[in-house]
Image 1: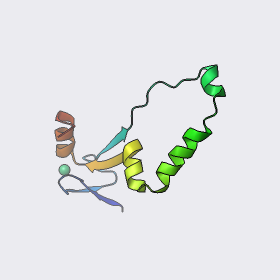
Image 2 (image 1 turned 90 degrees about the vertical axis):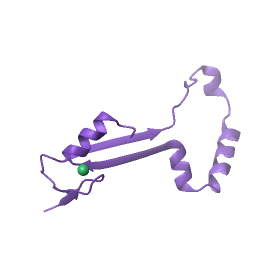
Image 3 (image 1 turned 60 degrees about the vertical axis):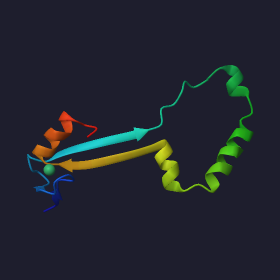
Length: 90
Ligand SMILES: [Zn+2]
């Protein structure tokens, strides 16, 4: 049997435990409007792409991920789920 524990208070929970709640959080960079005009689409972007690749070459993958997207998944017991809903940002 797969066992879980509350990621906040460490209470033991089973896979089908009615007291177990799953919380998923996504953090990602807010993108500005995308320019799909004919001028933008016909423009040569190879220099911009080359610069981005150059910047990424020496970058720490975790830093790059932190700047673009990060997903989290938590198992919470009933009490910790209630506390999360009351104050999601702590
Ligand atoms: Zn808990």
